[in-house]
Amino acid sequence: MIKKNDLILAGTVLIVALAAVLFITFTKKEGAEVVVTVDGEVYKTMPLDKDATLTLGDKQGNYNVVEVKGGEVTMTEANCRDQICVNHKAIHYNHESIVCLPHKVTVEIRDGEEGDIDIMAN
Amino acid sequence: MKTRNVAMYGMLIALAFILSYIESIIPIPVPIPGIKIGLANLVVVTALFLMGPKQAFMMSMIRIVLVGFTFGNLSTMIFSFGGGLLSWLIMTIAKRWNKFSVTGVSILGGISHNAGQILIAMWVVNSGVLIYYLPFLIISGLVTGAVIGIAGGLIINNLKKIELFRP
Image 1 (spheres, chains in turn purple, red):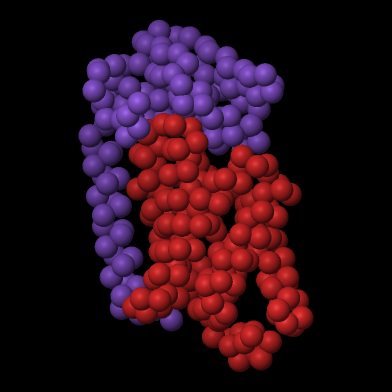
Image 2 (tube, one colour):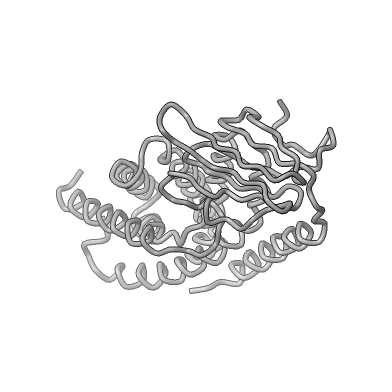
């Protein structure tokens, strides 16, 4: 059973969300650096133009491997159960991110300028 | 609590539990954390309309705890709680408002479930960057909520005819 209000709701949400998606898609900029945070703290910042591999591990045996290669960043390996981070596409645009939620690891592309949009101001 | 109701709640919770398991086996080829079909919400939405908010809340929470302890752990459960709580709250308010059908309520439930999960994720990981996933999760919640809502509507109309489901 579908009422008119349901369609208005669905239509409105769809338009707003699609507008956001289009905005994000068309204001994409190449990033300059990748910031790796663990449990909310910045662990390491690396430039995108230099190939590097970063292995993260903790006392409980969790590990993640972040690789910068050819200006792109991927999570090549992780021992989390869902592997969403490992299966993620390579990222290189500003504000793109790969997150390993079980291990609380985020890999984020930034443009290296201060005062970037950050919802969680510390 | 009547015995008959206890048995019915148990059966529905078990159903929600199995639906959660089935959906965890189905791989979704979209690399966004938190994207899901939300099959278990079918039970929550049905309970909400057939029985009421209290029953829906109880079933949703028990299901989350059971699934969490069986297939996950305490830290993954917190994401489910965040999504489930917000989703139940929004759906209860939407139903009370009486302007939407089951489908509309379920759409709001799907959207708020995904939104709730990403908000909790942002809090747990202490990172604002996850907000960029939100538009995709909203669209996903809208679509899955609509499908679940349509199915839920059919189920509710048919279950209403059975005396067992009118406590």
